Image: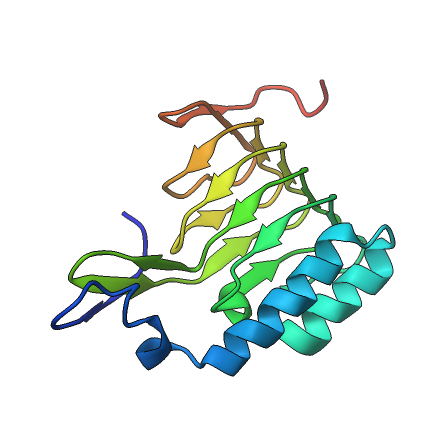
Length: 164
């Protein structure tokens, strides 16, 4: 089960009331920083932007590929370890806005993790050290350290060899 905290809303759906849950100006700033970062070819500069202006925890030698989208409302809920790769066009969410509630959850990605292109990581999950997530996977639950995860629905397999 994902680790998220639920917040009930009344009246219109939770996304309609989004600026009661997060500041418009915070979201505006985060969107500008993320859009700049999505196009940034320098990994060092992109990581610095995300650490400094978004409050994300990003380890050394971690690479967020072209057009990766961290959560625009709660990027400070995202932690990525050392020497990990987040593939092209991957989305890392720390929030879910539903009809009658919204949910927030930290996303923890370990050291030496590889996440393939076009993945979506949902709030409240942990991806353990050395795990590999194949392209186009919806990560909707924890991935153990060293495991291989892929598909939709996501299947998790123990890896028997360390290199491919």
